[in-house]
Image (tube, rainbow, N blue to C red; front, side, top):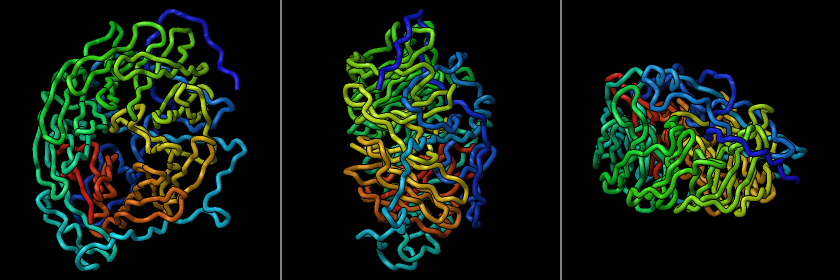
Length: 551
């Protein structure tokens, strides 16, 4: 395979990464069932979103795998810095766009389940799946100290189903665009949730509020990652005005519920614009990514470690994970060629580069160890997923038939890493196919050495499966709820055989609530499942915020 041609050097050009092309499409959803008032809240936006798989993504066209997979970044059109006005934000938030990735067959048809076809995930009970107490009635009402509703959410719980541990609702009044609540972290015995300019910590067992941290202005950027000792960094606005800049960062100790250092992220150049800033974290390092530059800080002290270089191929964003950083940079040439660079987390120095042919960009980073990139070409409408080795050389290209979900939206934390329902472990990428109304999707496991699909697990019964996390070859997935049926947390064996149910959520009054969370954040930790909304309507009435399931 030949290397792409190297374009000649040209005067500096702003770097960055932009949205994928494609026309907007309206969202869709299920009608709500039951009489529980907390199930009747419509999501933020014009239409009800379907279960968790349907995030409000960036625009993207269906595409096919090119013969030579390449990646390239192109910046968004320049615009004014700072946060968009509230009215404009309302329109942006309300928009919903479909996003899919079509991996071309390249002569390779993916078949699941051996000669008998793909197996249906008829979930089996795990050793401890039986609820304590009576198998036909609950041993609690699912509200507890964490819930401020009167409804018994476990009413009608069936044999073999687990419990709603608690539901947290809130009543606030806010601007017409609503209030962002996209941050969620589970750290030890605490689950923390953002609401506007606050972070609140709740006890995972019963939902009792443990602490509250209030910021001077709205939180405008988060990363789902934390350090090993439960610290994270958040972005917040420099004022409460409609023209505020999202350029303030603060470290937060989520275990202790205490604030750490705060500072303003200084501009690296006159062309440094804080448009759609995002965060990436690994180890003791956090990077603040924006349109043309990125800056790295030490999480423990707030010390600045490095910023993007002022010339050459300039990273406008870093992806982070597994103790590693890679920069996605735009080069100083007429074609605005894009390259991927490794970066020392302490200094930002690079030792290798992987340059893309003209017109290609990096639209997702699925993993850092190994490096798995989703690449797109806006001109040819092609897409590709490639795997790089530790030396930055292309290792393989994924090939399979299907239309795959690569959803990404403004309700999520990082446009390079935090917006796709994909999971990577040592040698496998787990990617869900696109979910359509009334049709079951699948999770496909790709071998990162051969690039071929190893197995497929269908959701079955018109349901939707989403990968949550993977370890030791096993996948944890969420089978999303429907108005009449609760969700499930499943463990998929390394060979893709029949999944085992780790949690079966109730199908009574709680199912329409679980199924109607807007663009939800989800976590599975220590045998509990957490689901929360990414935005509140903020119309001074009770709205569901955070729901927890367990044994």
